[in-house]
Length: 269
Ligand SMILES: C[S@@+](CC[C@H](N)C(=O)[O-])C[C@H]1O[C@@H](n2cnc3c(N)ncnc32)[C@H](O)[C@@H]1O
Image (cartoon, rainbow, N blue to C red; front, top):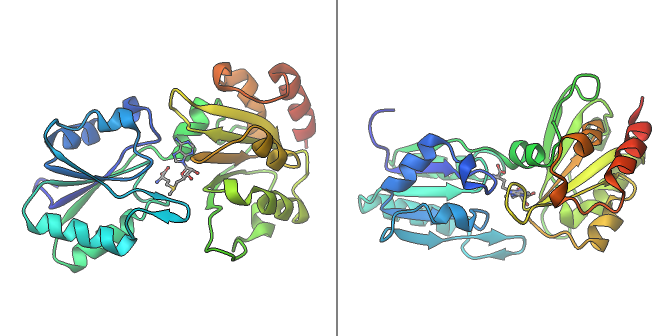
């Protein structure tokens, strides 16, 4: 990895600039041109060298500033010009980040790349919300899935396997399909009282967190007007949020102590 690659595919983490890796910070300082996504926080963009070019290619559900093909083409064109290109993505480039598609495209066109991993939002947001993804006695593992699907298509997930009370389920891009997600999980056997959390703008000053249950999560998300980017965490580990979390960002309508007691009671096997 000593040779400088044509393109660095860099994970920016979930938002707090202090969650950037040391390597990512070093690479950002050397960028001639940075191609960045919607989820890269303003605080991280401030770290880019003044005078270096920035190109926004952000995507939001249903609204694409540039298509993926256009982004791939842009990276190749910039690399061809011999510029030091940084492709900066929220979280980790290889987790729902299309980093692997861009890397494949670069390789197919004869350009080199290096991946700089970032803290994915499952790890960063849940930690800042006081939710350990595993905990002895509460969860033996974690599953990370996307709640996003093509327009007008049902979610193509294996609900029977996901409805496992012994593991934690983390759902990216799930806010728009919360009702379907919770109903399908309950229909597959996950108890309605399973603890669940929504974390909006995790790790950032405007972070909000709501602690609730599977049966109430959709109504809470609407009532409290949760918006993307939001992460959904479902499982017994959510009961620890009252003890381990930062209360400032909490908007749950349960008092947290009461809520934790209620959730712990409902989570007991
Ligand atoms: C296209 S995926 C990108 C995931 C990213 N590559 C990662 O590793 O975190 C976007 C989704 O990640 C989640 N997400 C990313 N950053 C977040 C944040 N700061 N707070 C809450 N959710 C976040 C949300 O579910 C959002 O809809």
